[in-house]
Image: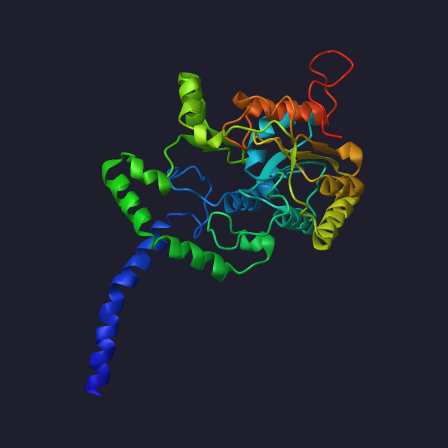
Length: 348
């Protein structure tokens, strides 16, 4: 008996550091995924799961704000901003950006189904999808891309477990401790932390990165010089991405269409341009247009006046907000040139 008690005591002593660590993690909640928050701008130096943030802001505000207009899509959707899109909509529109990093059709479908099940209106919708991620598999491993359990009907335990494991990353712990003690960002921290000033609008969920624009304004040539690896030389010939849409995807697309018909939604689907000038697959494009209508789907991939100019992009995939406005102008049939043709043409 004494041997057993001695063994239990040793085990408990051994586990003390873990329980202290676990308690500290829960109390501090570094990734802001345990407790409820009114403002996700706190601890902006710690990368957050954008899907979780978007979902939490929506769940927190849906009853008071009564959203009826939604932007769906991946990180490229950040640059089709609510503050810009509002000008294309009726005065009664209440806009929310329901974007997520590396969003795909499963995430979009889950969000639309959830909104519909809550009997919230969907009067206007814009999809901003990428040529490659839109119909890719869900990333269930990277904690920054795991879906919000309530919206996607997945395991809360698994979600919290993956976040907990992240805190055992030695590089992250080191970066967090040094930053907390010195309030200075060191070069080695860039793999774990963010060194930028940004803001998430607590109502519309619009994300603004002030630091990147300040860097461009200060010296745009240097901005692109230090990011040369993100802008490789291009062949100048058309390249088409592989076909991705499966029968399961088609079922989801048809469900989304039925929800839109039910709500009388005015919707636009924008396939975002990319600096690599890779085209969205033509067969997949035909499927999207057959489900949603050719007049609702706008493909800006491939070689065009947007992708030709490096200055239109922050990196190989993310275009600048003024480009987002140009895409909306085309989708809503607004001609900036005052002529008979639109200034940017969607791929036929």
